[in-house]
Image (cartoon, rainbow, N blue to C red; front, side):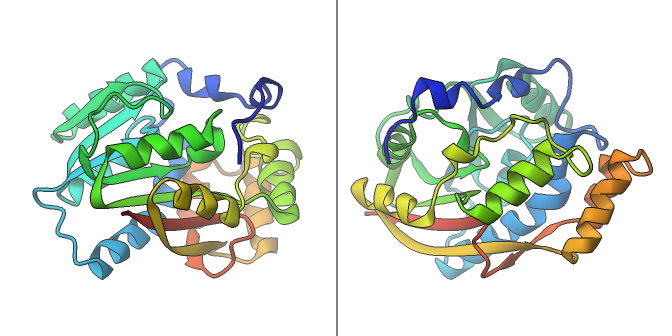
Length: 266
């Protein structure tokens, strides 16, 4: 894969994360679904990876690339890692800093971009990058930087969206564009920037990251029920809080839409 063109990148609305106020931690906000609908799956899988590798987070360092408002960063810190988050959107960064302070968590937050991480070589035992790879303009440079700051035998843990017909139908049309069900802004994702697993595996290999595994995800309810839940929100019968309580992603072998994985720095 190559760096996306400016024309393609211009179609994605990364300015959404610069929104004023707390757009992350309010229970009835769209981004709070990351905590209620996504984190149980992604954090659960991350714990399995750490257990499989016999990694005790205590005394280990972790970096989250694209930490947003800190919803996943705080989960990483709670596992016991000495945790750093880096995020380009200053408004989201301030939200993360304030929430960590109010939660009594010690997390170092920095402003910066994934393509130019401001850390020395081999700084971290673990790098986490979730809901980010499909948003960056220069994916090869991002993967290169992640590898650079990882220690030998360090873990790169990630998730992203697959570029398939089904992901265009679900993640773009149903989730973003078709007003009957849409619960996301129309340009929060750009299908052309989604990443096929084989493409990512190639980039990992080119950057001394030994790919180990991919796992897919599936909705916790049937497709008709999921569509019914989304319709309830559109009609005003439910808010995002109710949606998050009733709909989650769960680990599966279906990688058509959203998948998780990890690699080890050689």
